[in-house]
Length: 250
Image (cartoon, rainbow, N blue to C red; front, side, top):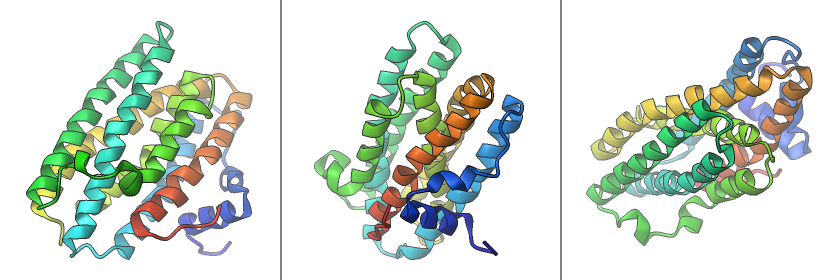
């Protein structure tokens, strides 16, 4: 495949309907730590390049672009709380440590929503709740519906898919966007407070579920790669289209 980026390779495989191949060279049947580390590195490579694509293809000197990104993020934050509340209920008393961190994440998401809302108003836009979630963040709603309804009956696999895989994208996106020189100071101030929490959501919440699953052995590790491949179309093609207006076939 030469020097093709991981992002372009993933998009090519999405078009072919075979994105699972992006993980074909990853080891299975290894320790949970080794497996989770290798998968995380591959996802980081894909999503950091996806975030770079979005940063490159949007006119960040336009306030409208920054407001739309703020609304996209804000609607995702408040909708995510519904998904995480369902996860908490499904965990029950089985995994108290996992339940604890998901509860922490719910509080983070609502605080993030308020930060984005305050930033949008100070940037001259309407409050988030006066905009349309379908128009501003439709792809996010599709992803959360998938996690809630079609991902898996195992709550750990739901958390792995949503928090370990999908939430890795906003972590890279927010970190890249906050370094844009043209960014409005209120938007940057919000992102500076949010990015550390996103690291916890991926490397604390998501990783805990991933390690629990990977410790079950080779068959579960293979299934985790399948689950990661199933959510990637929501994570990459749909989100990138929603932000840039360019939809990739998948």
